[in-house]
Image 1 (cartoon, rainbow, N blue to C red):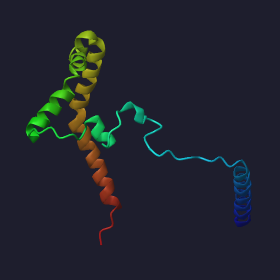
Image 2: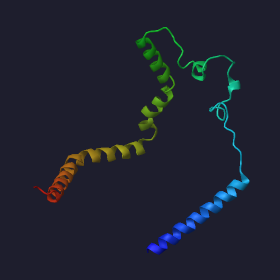
Image 3: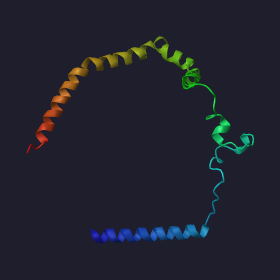
Image 4: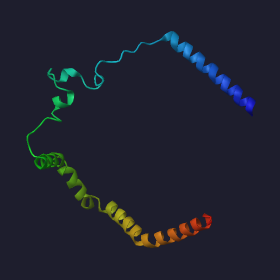
Length: 136
């Protein structure tokens, strides 16, 4: 068994050396961009200023408003676009009553057997756990 492992390790090392030698001959020169965001977001999208990228987008710009006013504004802005989705969620039982009914029955069934299943599981688990623990 040990000789087989030695042979495999030797063949793997030879294969890696051959691969590295072939790669070194082809040697592709990669130039890292000056801006790490360049492949995804061009600097030409923004007007040239001395600000950092996040300040250009207005993410951290001071607004001279209190913490609670800013939190309220952010909450309203973030929830402002989901009224259509909330309507779709709320009207789902009316749009597809058969699927909703099947899911509701399934969840109701799980709720009905939850206490019995939990009790049975805990009895089996604690019995098997107490049998495997060695008390010194």
